[in-house]
Image (tube, rainbow, N blue to C red; front, side, top):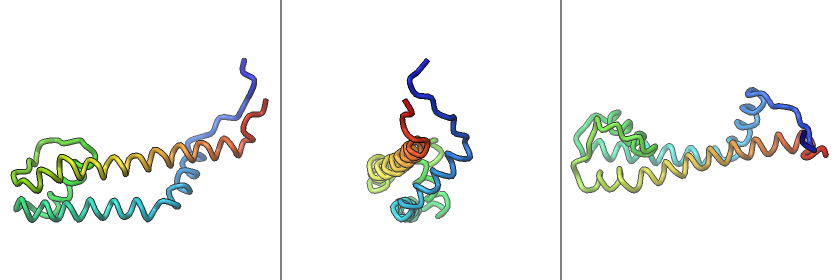
Length: 116
């Protein structure tokens, strides 16, 4: 079939390597998590909602899910929900995808790359 044959990698092996890669970017991910949480607290104060609902809304907005159960009414919270939080969520998601791709690349290199 193909010129190169390589062994399939199991999920446990991939997940272990993925966590190793995440270890190197943990401070960035933690920073993004804390910023999103802080913005949720700001939103809770602005919108006069429970602090946990503000944090929930911030994460739902950051990941561009937007269930619509909480709707911002103030200009600041609309700006945060429409521009700032989705941008932070995209950065967070991008880092996670890059970490997964790096883990796959590391496992591929550990198998000896192209064995052909």
